[in-house]
Image 1 (spheres, helix red, strand yellow):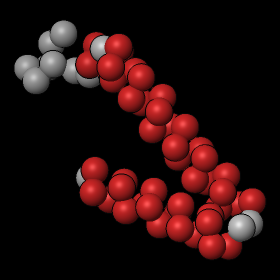
Image 2 (cartoon, rainbow, N blue to C red; image 1 turned 180 degrees about the horizontal axis):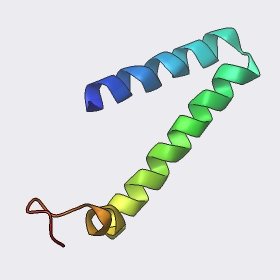
Image 3 (cartoon, rainbow, N blue to C red; image 1 turned 120 degrees about the vertical axis):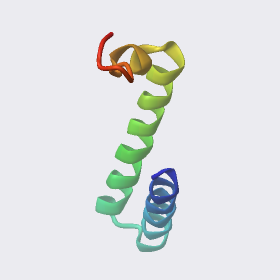
Length: 58
């Protein structure tokens, strides 16, 4: 899954740089912002706190 996200971000960055159109650039910035938000939430423990336990109980 992480491999596909990395490929998507890399392809979006290439398209944004080559085409110089605002649409692909917005998609790249939005994806990058979501990745930063997820990283901050993961590092602070919010994502782990919201994830269900393997047994189904929290």
